[in-house]
Image (cartoon, rainbow over all chains, first blue to last red; front, top):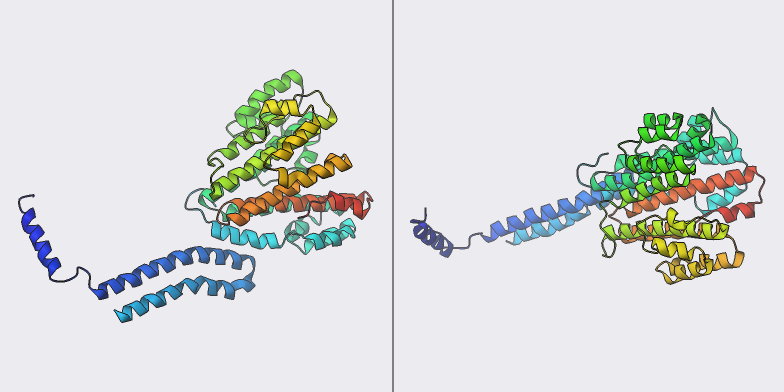
Length: 85
Length: 351
């Protein structure tokens, strides 16, 4: 499998020289994806605390909902990056 | 729920802080102090004790109703804690709540020692630990210490209690049995907790546990020093604290002044200095013991504030809830005995 390694390497290098491996649109898509992951992780913690608080006192539902979706704001920045890219 | 899965401190601590807010505060106690036992139980009916009071209300009345409702309320609350928690948090809370298993076993042993009627012993159980109702019922109905040892075979209390039972047979004293139970509990508590010294939540918890053990040792030592009994306090010593070694404890307890000085110079000096002053002034242990309890609650609460994503807030809540039950009990019993409200107030541990 090593005999054609040189050919493969030159093929890869050729490809790279013709343009970036990930285009700026691709990068922007990655940004949206990572931002979504981050927001999801943040909401995991806030969400479970919010459910706990609402279980104890139903009046807290609105506040809990607002706090839970706050991390979504980071996705707005990701979308801006998407549009600019 | 179970010890599997990932731990969920966010959920549990949100619920725990909501529960903490519903605990009786200074204002409530002031109202309770002016009430008769029946009024107190009615007041409790409008609080978190509503379920137990309603359930037991048809069978009991007066101070008995309050007493049973408090025990049932504690058990209910702590069972809920276990139902909420998952993963490592569940494990830590469950280990801590074995305190009530230890209490129940002690109650059963004392009942046998004193030859108390099983029904009366059963009233004093707090069904909040890991033992199920069937096991507790059998413990209460056990005829002798050996039967209890057999029943507990396989639990954390099994082996230590079996060893202590031999000593009990020889000496006829309860002390070895109670010590064995305490030691088994605290040893089990430290398993899986990393040692103190770091700055993380785990070490804050370990530090809290050390404080609990140290305070218990201090209390035992002072009681012995005061009573002047010819018992070596090293026999009562519980391992795991940082304040004393067993040898230190036995020398210090012969000399109360040195003991007080030792505590003042330790890391609990700041927390306990007011209590020590009070003890020196009033020449009474009661005030000091209340101050120790208050300091412990305070310690747990600080740890909970510093590490909100750990087991600390739950432990702080457990302690505060226990104090609440103790306070209500003191008020109810005191009022029934016709004590002056000011005297009862001095018995309360309010933070």
